[in-house]
Structures are given as C-alpha cells and as structure tokens.
Image (cartoon, rainbow, N blue to C red):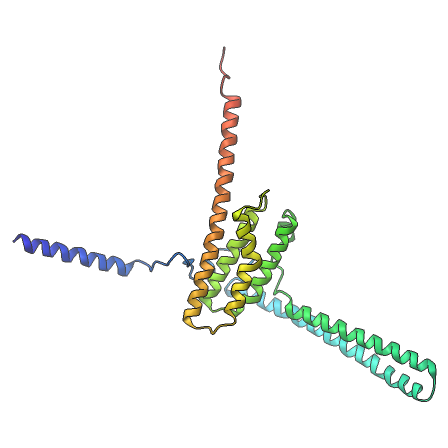
Length: 272
C-alpha cells in the first residue's frame, strides 16, 4: 500500500511542475530585456509612439520633409531659369568678340557652380536629417557639453537604424538606447572617468553604432536577429546597472546628510 501512495505523490508532484511550467511566462536569458513592445518602455520623448499619435508624428515628419524638398526644387528651378539664359547671352556676345562678355560668362559659370554645390549640400542635409528633434532644449540646457554631444550622437543612431529593424529587435534597440541615455545623465557629474563612465560613453559613441552597422551587413536571419537582441540586452543591462549604482550613491549621500543633521541638531540638545 505504501509504494502505491509514494507513486501517486510522485506523479502528482510531476504533474504540478508541468502545469507550472506551462502557465508561467518564458524566462529570458541575461542578454535579453524581456520587453515585448514599445509600450513596455513607458512614455519617453525619444520613442515614436504607436497608434494615432505615431501616425500624427509620421505625417508631420513627411510634411516637413516634403516642404524642404519642395523649397529646394523651386530654388533650383529658379536658379536654372536665371543662369542658363545668361550663359547663352554672354556666350554669344563673347563669340562676337566682346571681351567683357567673357568675364561675365566666367562669373555666371562660377555662380552656377556655387548654386550646384549649395543644392547638393542642402539635399544631403535633408537626406541625413533626423526624423524630428525630440530632445527638448530645456532638458539639455543643464547638461555638460560632452553629454549633450553624446546624446545628440545617440539620438542620431536611434533615428538612423530604428525603422530598418524588425519589431522584436527594434524594441530591444529602443531599450538599449534609452538605458544608455539615462546612464549618460546619471554619470554626468562624475569628476573622474572611472570604469562606469567609460563604459557609458563607449556605448553611446562606439558600441551601439558599430553593432547596428555590423548587423546591417549580415542577412536578417532569425539567428542573426537573436544575436543582435542578445548583444543589445547586454548593453542595456550594463547601462541599467550604472544607473542603479548612481541612484544608490545618491541615496547613501542623502542618508549621510540626515545623520549629520541628527548629530548636529539632536545630540546634546537636551537640558544640561
């Protein structure tokens, strides 16, 4: 009778473990953030929201870019309308033997060349411009110049690569970028460049951009996407650890100040 009871208990324990493993969410390794969507990151001005707000921002972005290209096209057409007739007129006059027309022809060619260079520069800026300026000027005003430069570079990396990534990798990329930005701000007051500060700046300046550039050179297979998400999770985890350490330091400083005030105002304050 006892062996039967033992067998029944063993089967019951095994069944309960199976049920728990089925109803529990899958556990991710140390290199994954565990986020399933942009909403899991909360509201952040660096992230493009989903739904109507995201569509509104996208429409505004397209409108701004369309306006910029329209202005550039109009200016180019007007410049061509002015330059080509002048070239024709001065060319005919120079062919007739008028020396002054040669100088005017050269000046017109120089102006036309400068106009082409200006058009090419503005077109390049329009192509490489970020989707939108989402970093409020007021929030950056109190940041050191080096941190502002790192945040600008980090935001450019985000805007350059986010739309080319599949949804799961995009969420991991967003999480890594936001964690790196928060770590930059948390370590901005570091007087000495220690290991944490060095890792934070390297993540913003080199690790994230180089990782995304390398990923874009390989086929987007599931294995490569999983490796990208793993490495992004490693960066996010390291940056989050830096933020937690800085918050703990500030908490200890606050408690130390409280003990100082207690010693100053409470100890020995009673009647003699």
